[in-house]
Image (cartoon, rainbow, N blue to C red; front, side, top):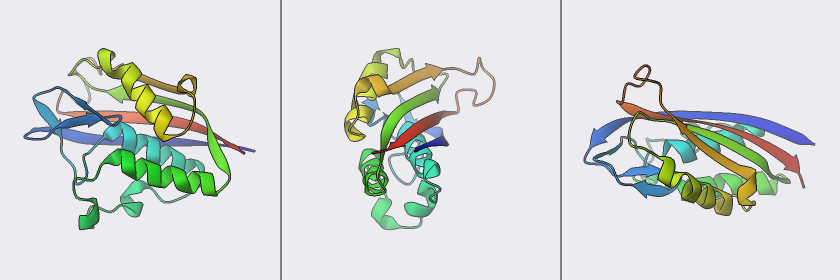
Length: 156
């Protein structure tokens, strides 16, 4: 049996925060505003996993009203979500992600992000894809970063 899930997240860029994407700190003058580390890529992946199994999203699972998640490491949140996926008898078959950002240039960080995500999800790196694109000055207009994730789960 297979299940498919889609996740999306977006956060505003602000000064005074670190930029974390796919569990990695990316050198940039701004970071993403959020209750946790605001890692939009990891949040989108977690929501895709939860969506594939018809479970509530991360906003419900890790609410910003709960101080336990203040500045939380999103990779740790993803590990929590994935442990539930595994407990339900599923594993990642394929993960495809797109990060939407005018700046910074993400090309040098794509492979390392794939590596972090594949290790977190206990799957081969060949099963994890991360792409980056801009919106050609439209949409977020450099004021934020968004991410989409699509996951295919298979019953173990």
